[in-house]
Length: 157
Image 1 (cartoon, rainbow, N blue to C red):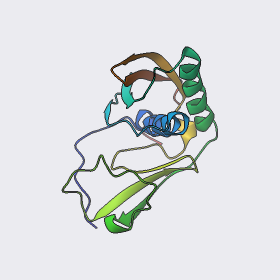
Image 2 (tube, helix red, strand yellow):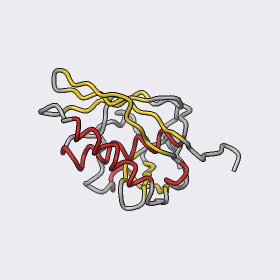
Image 3 (cartoon, rainbow, N blue to C red):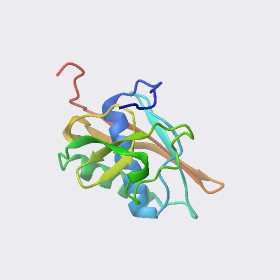
Image 4 (spheres, rainbow, N blue to C red):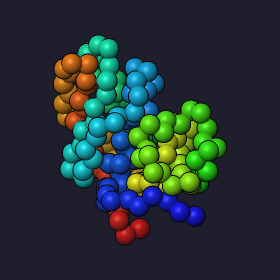
């Protein structure tokens, strides 16, 4: 099986939290997954295109919903599928034009599924607490900056 090469070394809890944030944004605002993100161990940011600025209460709701998903102790599973047989619900717009014939799908319980070659935790109980640090909105773009607190993740299980 041939997959595209991966040029990043993500911190698995933060990268998995990004997936949960993306799905939360889709559910709350009907927007697309973040196409511009910067995911690091200490803090991260994701951009979303929205028709209106979210309220302070909505930003708090985003944080709450991501933490609710984390606290469900959802299994993170990987599967492989031919790129011509991907379920319609999966957004492939971020994939490179030279994507391999086989795609790797990452499923987080019944909360999220997407094509991804990054590293993830095995269960959301390894993520810790998701905390929105700040957000700003300009020209239809919402930027959310976030971090994780108290992650029990260990790179040497």
